[in-house]
Image (cartoon, rainbow, N blue to C red; front, side, top):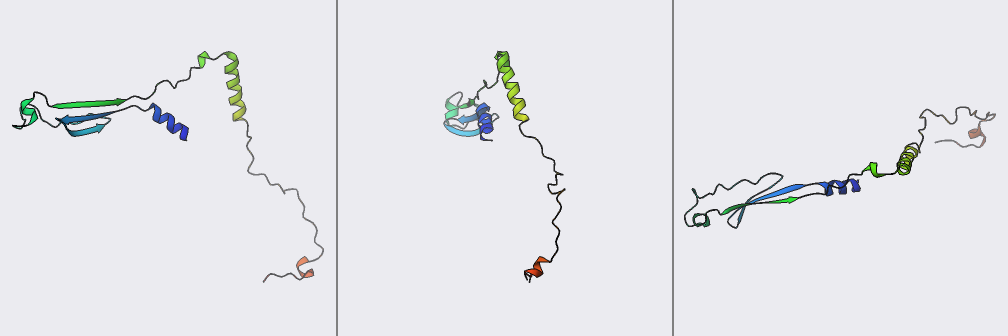
Length: 127
């Protein structure tokens, strides 16, 4: 389970988007685009950085790319190697045989004949 989780996390790719208005982080989003703050040059507040600068808002997108080279190419294997892999898989799958659930091990066992009542003979009684 741990190995499958490691392979899954190593091949996962995602993007992290951030929207800054000046130096202030307004919105951040994972797997989608961050929403804009709505500040552009038309509705900028007087005296703010956006009234002086033409474009004070910026979007930053950080992309984390997972590895892509986990594919195994079986065509590069020789015939002997392919034969070994097939035989190994066949013997591994047939390693254990199923056991019938209806097996009764004492089916043909005949109990000993009792001549005397043993509990009375030894005077052992359940209370």
